[in-house]
Image (cartoon, rainbow, N blue to C red; front, side, top):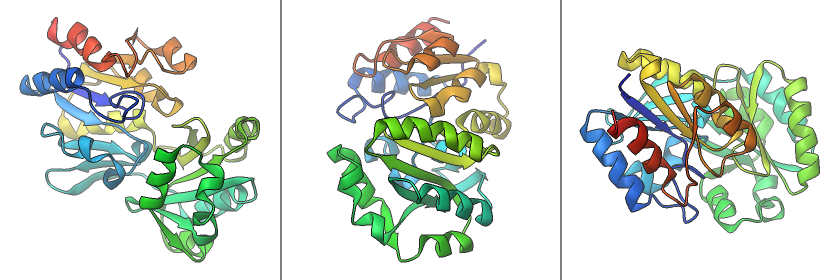
Length: 274
């Protein structure tokens, strides 16, 4: 096989702890792109919410965003595929999440929205300054979130917890309560809920169809639970050295951590060596 598409989770994978793309990873991706490989960020964020360092990568055209709810062509500036929750389903999910001791928000049409009452309490539930800053910058406050969700199709709903034990319990409860959704987590204190078909693994298959590429000719990198089916579906699924144990168990290969140029190491092994 020859790798033709590389999908990359961002935080904890392509991005190091400083939220930058290391020189080693950049060089490997640039070389792979020059060989004709599609370099595709695959993130839980919406496109405009990705760090500029990623959006400005000159060799990136296609982006899998919102956990697979959207495939975006950055060159043509158009959505190629999308998966959304129906309004009544989104409202039911939001009603449950907002009953919990958590901060809730939603992605709609490639942007983040949050009830004004929650927006004022971001620091209460998000203690990591980088994440809190991102939420303030990438969320528009609304007066009535349920009314807003009734009028718009949501791509994803989220809840952020300051009680990790409660978050662990609710992660399982949400899966059982809303079985027709895709439930995952991209950071340690959150729960993310997408439509059933909105997964990174599903987006990988859809992107292959768009590009006319066989699935076995793909490679995917990740570290979190929202990367699980992407790693399983890819021709070569790579878990980062800092990935959660469940991802390492299903991966074809475990590379170095995000702070050790793990992406570059695996590309050297599976792309440049063939």
